[in-house]
Image 1 (cartoon, rainbow, N blue to C red):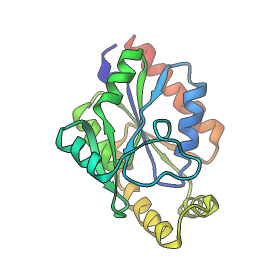
Image 2: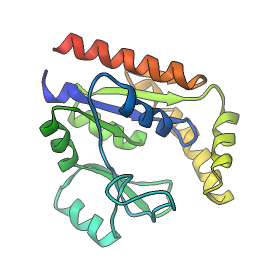
Image 3: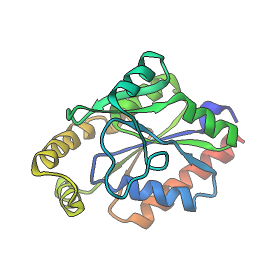
Image 4: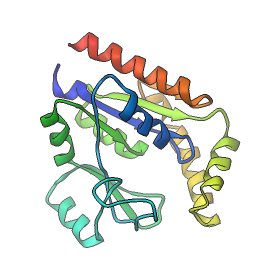
Length: 193
């Protein structure tokens, strides 16, 4: 199997449950997945650890790496002044491990990755309604009202990209959503073996 076909890109608006799905896939998938650790300039949340959840970089370090073309994609997200990106070294790390490179990124980043790697597998996670997005965002208790409103606006914008993905999965039943993605991965792996 060529390396390009062993890239999995998952996107979805904040509150779609994509992070929960991603964590379950890493544990449950029979296809070996190596989650790519994104770099960001935003501060870590209390439960997050550098090098595990994200690479937390200063803006100067992020800019230095961007200027050195070390990112496969990077973008300022949510218009809050924070940058996110996927380092090329992360894709190499997965390849060296013989695993699929597993990217959980926003739609703009996914668009860039798919331009560079058109053979990558792309999946968009959604919820049955906008109300579910908002309820999940509020239940986190980690963002201000202003941030929640920006994320809701961003979610509406991201949904406009859903048709660009090979698959759209509605996360109205977590177990079913995970099982469906695993089935897609297993079929893709066996087809390309």
